[in-house]
Length: 380
Image 1 (cartoon, rainbow, N blue to C red):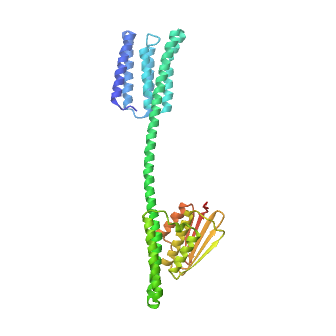
Image 2: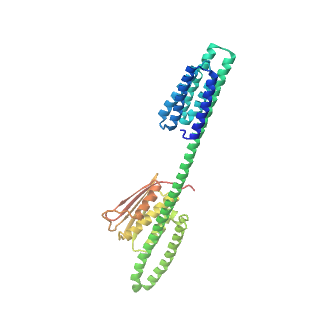
Image 3: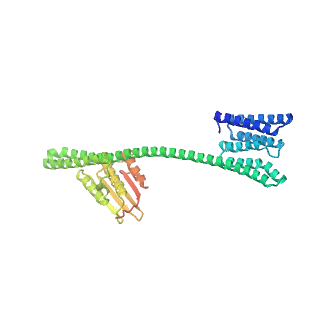
């Protein structure tokens, strides 16, 4: 809606000059001049009042009143058509799209055009001459042109505003996406650090405890274990550098069953825990993402079995079907009465859910993990 006083003042000055010109053109007597003066005062009140109106319904009423007043200007004219008064219709057509949405603007502009041409229709009916038809056509097409022009400008302005808001929303969405990407990357790094460092240090601690016992009983075996510990510590250092440098996951953990067997072999060599690994169904070459999730889940299951469950036997079963992979890990540890999901279990869930799978944890006669993933076959 118009809220610029300068535009309002300019319009009032223009209409005042047009009104004076129309009165002079009419050369009206005092009675008709007083009627015109009264109508023009109402016209001014309608325009000024509209400046302060906020509701669209009340603005519409002010336009209806103004349209009726302009019609009365022509109705009391001594001429069939007073062309100066007719310009007031054009001012309305210029102003309507500013106040209303596109649909209401088009409808009210059409109504204004129809009413503004009543006099011309009557003139053509009374004097069906070329001059009457040409004059009526000129004012009709001028009104149509102004209505179309203003409504097009209004439409263009609305579309530009929509585009501006859409661009703003896209920018905000990009900012949020960047923030989410940063958070996701931080979470990924945290999960990888937990999986690599946590698992590696757990194995190192177990081996050191064994070395502590063997150092007085079998010094040669203890020395060999120290050498192995040195190598595994170097591997852990490499893993840390990969994670911190946000490199791609180590290819060794995305090789599927081969990676799992290497993990279990490394784990059993550093501990006194027996691990039974069983495969059911026909193994297929799955996607690296699925392999990594299965690998990390087994890694976390092995680590938790020692760290929390004090287990000495872990059974791992990997089952393949035509559309899914199921992993079941169960240890014979102490278990817990209530499963409290720490960082490791939550990290497992995040990985599994990101691939559209599901994972459950149970603690009865030890601790169990049941994982199910959609089967994603890797194409060579």
